[in-house]
Length: 283
Image 1 (cartoon, rainbow, N blue to C red):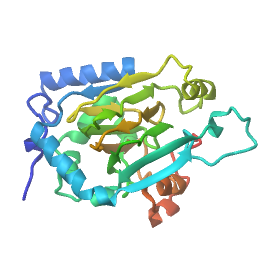
Image 2 (tube, one colour):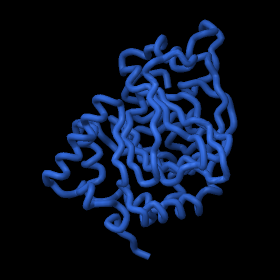
Image 3 (cartoon, rainbow, N blue to C red):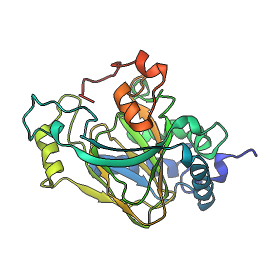
Image 4 (cartoon, one colour):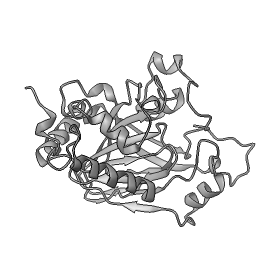
């Protein structure tokens, strides 16, 4: 069956592929939210039909998800006993989650149809107000289009993203829990800001924002610099969130260690490009 993004994206509300005043207004609102709040949410970006189709695709691929249970820090690095005991790099939390890798979502399926839809990349770039020479699709064949699948008891503790620009599409909520919590822009390319990270981890930060997303909502978030987590879930319904990833340099892929943690396997490209990043941040 041939499907089109026009069946699933609410183009009347979000005319992403056409230059017009309505699109300009959406861009202005998104940029203001990113500047003031650290993220932006486009409510109802996906139609109800699109949500249903995407949930069906996630359900069909869910058995390919890599479920992992471990203790991890915010940087996905191993413990370093040479650091002080209260250093955030030595603060480890239980992580239980599942990611369905990108190679389970074929061209022609709804998630890649959305990702490949006319104007989508350019609209996201303009929303983020990034120059064209610093905006690229993530080149990781396991991680450019993925679904995070979380069940009762699961949660994803405080962490930073590997990618500068993460775009998420809420598909299905759990019955209870699963709020998205984040501390906007608390580190930069030049400064890890360990002091403020420690406050978030120990619950004393006043910078944490809690956000409730509904199925069909598109969220733009700069997770490379904003510490964030998903609160634990409850109930029988899994939480599905699709993730479309962008970075600021061409050819970037995940590190070997982090890819193995998240997806349970690596590909030759991860080993070939290990350490090839556009910044010097520790993860």
